[in-house]
Amino acid sequence: MTKPNPKPKKQGAQDTDEEIDLGHLFYVLGKAISSVFAWIFNLLARIWDLFISLLLLIRANFKVLAAAALLGGLMGGIYQYGIKTKDFESSMTVQPNFGSSVQLYKNIDLYQSLIEQEDYDRLMESLSISEEEALSLKKIEVEPYENDNQVLLAYKDFVQNLDSLTFDLVGFEEFAKAQPEESFKYHVVTVRAIDRFVFEKLEDPIINSIINNRYYDKVKSNANENLLSKKKALESSLLELDSLRSIYKKVMIAESQKENSGTNIYLAELNASNKEVMVFDKYLSLNEDLFEVNNRLTEEREVINVVSSFNSVGMNAKGWYRNYAILGFVVGFALVFLWIQIVRINRFLQKVEESRQS
Image (cartoon, rainbow, N blue to C red; front, top):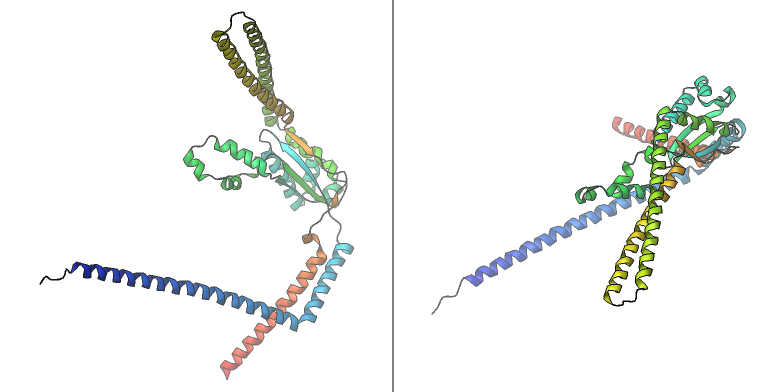
């Protein structure tokens, strides 16, 4: 009588152990998932209880809170419309060239610093305005006019010189975040003042402070000379290409008028036609280069271009954060609500103290 083979039993034992391990694993995972959902449910329940308690507290003290909010709003409205002088705003959009945006930001920071330090004598001198006009200035700031298309074009130029590894490391979002304020093409200068007619007088001093910089003036002159030289070279090349195109056309006409027919004539015409296409493609490429040069000559004619000027008359400064009636309403409500909470906490602490003493 033959003995049974022990190997099947051993394989069966292994399968049983694997089933037990998988069952335990699923049990642990299920328990962990249940714990996570229970924690989330408890958190939401606590938030809901806190929200209900907050509503109950507001309902119990509604009259006091409403009175405080209305009183705060009334006081804010009286201050804004009866006591506080009106603020006016106006903006100017500029296009700095040759890296002059760095100087623009430094100058604007200087003007704002003089306003904060109340150094109105230097402010008068820097902006060529009267003392009364200098005293009316409240804030002057500059910020880039952010445009996704401009950032996308800059990113396109940036990645052209990168290898595949670096390209994977530097994405568009990282590139956009790393862009300094001065690198944008357009910038907006915003001024806030009490005098609604002062804004137009600030444009020339701000722009001249950049234009009169000798360094940028020299860079502009060199750049314009180079662009003019490039323009002449492109125009000369285009004239030569025009002449070459005319020659190819004459050759094709002459070949087509020959008496001999056959493959040689066809190949000659095909060869001349291909050359004309190549010349035409080169002609289009040079035209695009010339168009770009002309655009740069227009845009870079000055160190800094004014895209849109300050308004002759300033507009009322807007924004909810400048509405003191709304701010007074919110502050009045918040202060009384905080006081009620402090009173409740104090009562609770008194009870705890009494219970310990007893």
